[in-house]
Structures are given as structure tokens and as C-alpha cells.
Amino acid sequence: MAGRLEGKVAVITGAGSGIGAESARLFAAEGANVLVSDMRAESGEKVAAEIGDSAAFQAVDVSREADVRAMIEAAMARWGRIDVLFNNAGFGGAIGPIESTSADDYDITFDVLLKGVFLGMKYVAPIMKAQRAGSIISTASVAATIGGGSPHLYAVAKAAVVKLTETVALELGAQGIRVNCICPGFIATPLAVGHPDADEDAFEKLRNGIGRSQPIGRLGEPRDIAQAALYLASDDSTFVTGHAMVVDGGVNAGPAWDHWPKWMTESRPLKMYRPKGR
Ligand SMILES: NC(=O)c1ccc[n+]([C@@H]2O[C@H](COP(=O)([O-])OP(=O)(O)OC[C@H]3O[C@@H](n4cnc5c(N)ncnc54)[C@H](O)[C@@H]3O)[C@@H](O)[C@H]2O)c1
Image 1 (cartoon, rainbow, N blue to C red):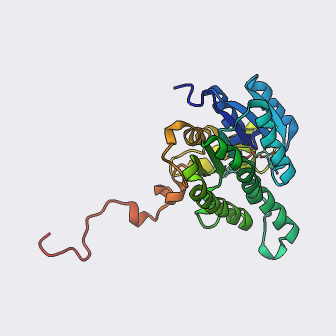
Image 2: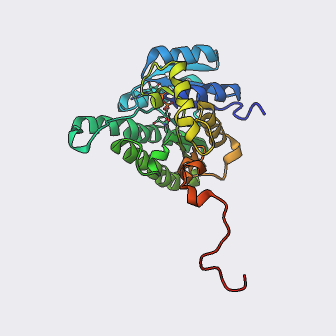
Image 3: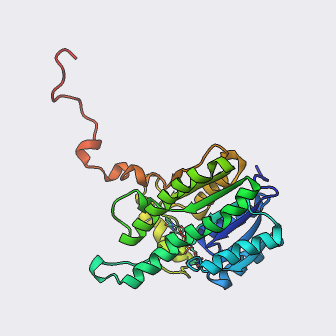
């Protein structure tokens, strides 16, 4: 079904790669005008050019207030409204033991992963209030809900994105603005590989490795998250707000069945403590 975003304007951060790029393509295919924003101009411009007339590129570092304000102003100057803001830009942030994490790396991690989302919400809110309509979507992560497997500060920042989503949804709901986030599992993007210019071979390795161990039996693809974002952006979800939508192939539910202890997964008759006569 095409045209689910017909006539709408969407601003997407981190749209030069991975989840953001795929969302920009899908939103445009569904009828939206899209402002493709990214810190990396070359990749962002490429995505916007590929989409064509319904897209434009804006360079933005989401950790800088002036950049985020300019991004919102650029979309308004070009299209006169903003129906969807997708705060998606991100990176892995500081990694390693707590004792060797510098305070500077702490600041950068939170500035990109949390302040970037806060700034997007802050600058789009007055516009969406005046329109009395809008959908704000942010990319959190299953790192917010599952213990282990992701860097300390990344997990905390993503958990904060979930909470910020909930509280801002409560403020803006009565004004027709919905605020939601998506918690992706493992998705085949440069971020998951650990290199911004990762090639197809690196993704294949990931698909054949960690992908096979996912409960659903495969790695997530950027399209899986773009489709969730499309639902939250569109009028199909007008009663959905304050929600953290987990899109993870089952990871949040637990390990895949073949990773459970054998004694639990083999068929056997119930004997111990069986009630008499049953
Ligand atoms: N790939 C996964 O497994 C996964 C899982 C959970 C959540 N996420 C989240 O998904 C979002 C998108 O990541 P992705 O997986 O598509 O990775 P990606 O590396 O393909 O894309 C991230 C994009 O964000 C941009 N970016 C980084 N810092 C920025 C900044 N300060 N300002 C503006 N742009 C900036 C990068 O240039 C890049 O184009 C991130 O928020 C990430 O934390 C990813």
C-alpha cells in the first residue's frame, strides 16, 4: 500500500546510512518530502540525490544545538511544516571498562545519543503544537531493556531515550503530537559491524554468525526498522504514543530455543510431583 505519508514532511537524522537511509527511502516512496540529515555530508547527499526531488540534504551534528535548530528551520523554510521528526542518529559511544572511560567520552556519548534526541524534540515541539499534529520518533535500542552485550553508557543513554519518550508523550499528547521510540535488536548496519564504511562481506559475516543465533533465525535489516518507523509516522498509529516498540527478532524475549539447556527442551513424561491419579 503506497502513499501512507502522502503530503507529509519528515526530518530524519542519521539518514546517510543504515536505518536512517532506509527510512528516508521508504518514507519518500510512501509520498513524504524528506530532509535527509547527517553528520557525514557525502553519504547524506548521496541518499538525498538517490531519492530525488522530494528529498534535500542538511548537514547536522545532533550534539550541537545550533545545528539541530538550523535543521528544523531548513525543513520549515523548504516545505512549511514538519509532520514527522525521526531522531535516529547514533553511534556506539564510549566502550570498555568503567575505570578507563574518560569523562570527555562520557560527555560525547550522551551529547549524541541523548542530548541530540532532546534537542530534536525541543525544536520541533513548537512547530507541531502550532500544527496541532505531529509524530516524533526516536531510535532507542534493546540495549535499554536487556542486561549485557552493549557498552555501559550506550545502554544507559538508550534507556534514557525510552524514558524521555514517555514523559514528553505525556506533555504533548493533548496537542495532537505523538511521541514514540523504537528499540531495534541486531540490525545489519555499519554501526553493528563497528565501521562506518563496512562492506557487504562484513554484513554477510554478521548475518551468518550472530544472525543465525537470533530467536527469529536471522539478523535484522534496516528495512525491518524503517517499516516500524513508517507505522509510527503514519496515520495508522494515531492512538499510539509514549510507546517503546521492540523490533528485534525476539532477542528481548530471551535466547533462542536451541540455546536452552537440553534437559528443558527434550520431550519427556511428567513424573516428579505428579498429582495422584492424574
Ligand atoms: N544497528 C544496530 O544493531 C542497532 C541496534 C539498536 C539501535 N541502533 C540505533 O539505530 C540508530 C541508527 O544506527 P544504524 O544502525 O543505522 O547505524 P549507521 O552507522 O548505519 O547510521 C548512523 C548514522 O548516524 C550518523 N551520525 C552519527 N553521529 C552523528 C551526529 N552526532 N550527528 C548527526 N549524525 C550522526 C552517522 O554518520 C550515520 O550516518 C542509532 O541511534 C543506533 O544507536 C542500531
